Amino acid sequence: MRQRGMCTVLQAAGLSAAEESTYLSLVRQGSAPLPQLADRIGLTAAGTRRAVAGLQRKGLVHRTPPPQERVVPVPPDLAVEQLVRRRMEELERTREAALRLADEAEHLVSSRSTEELIEIVSGRAAVGRAFDRVQRTARKEMRVLTAPPYAKGTGVNRTQLDREAAGVSYRAVYDANALADPDMAAAAATHLRAGEQARLVETLPTKLAIADRELALLPLAYATAAHDAALLVHPCGLLDALIALFETIWAVATPLALGDDDQPTADNGLTAADRQLLSLLVAGLTDEAAAARLGVSRRTVVRRVQHLMELTHSRSRLQLGWQARERGWL
Image (cartoon, rainbow, N blue to C red; front, side, top):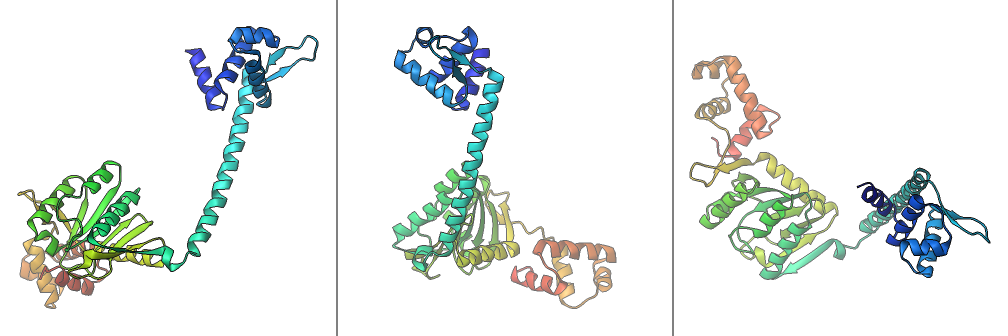
């Protein structure tokens, strides 16, 4: 067990198998002339000379002067310390080189032409392949706006299931028309069971798929033939704007969950009392008047309004009223 552990350390430090066996023989059996060392480790004279030369370069052995020339090992504690220090210096140089390369890459991205930043994809099959490409580009997260028509049909997105199994998270916002399709609703239920975070809006402004901050796909036109041509967008100002668009829609969308019938159902956390409260506030009633109408305390009204504002990410009651109408709560 001790030998195996030492071998692991030496291999990690960059020794070849011949260098490793040569050094271990010297440490365990003492210094030796080259011919005797070759017999010990079972190497040819030339192979032993190469191993010893490699060990000398790494600072693990030294040789005594002729005519009684012997190969002498450097004590393991000193030898390994030198190897570790040398490896750390190499890693530091590698890190510095990687940082310089990253700076160069960032400069190249900023100076890329429009043709390099935006690709036009034509044909339904090509658009479907581009959607797969975007998904396989993601390493952390996919953001998706889903609405008809579809380049790859309305079935389960197998690529999504594969990517989720690999640790990629999915956030999807569905257009209400998407879930009106029974096949798409069934596929969405499968995606939800697999871990997709999903939300619903009445109408989406466009279809969209974004892989991390690396690549996005959106249709050239949001129409019947939208799946026949699309844009692939690489890192640039447009990609930043598309990410912001998704996050804005996500913030106002209603969460989706699986209902009792195992179908996607809007889970807005809204009760009948909440709807009645919203209608009273929109009608202009004060908190006191709304509380009296509902038969609850003013404190309860304030608490429920605060909950609704958090639910809709509203910063004011005016915005809450607008959000309630947008979401069809009134």
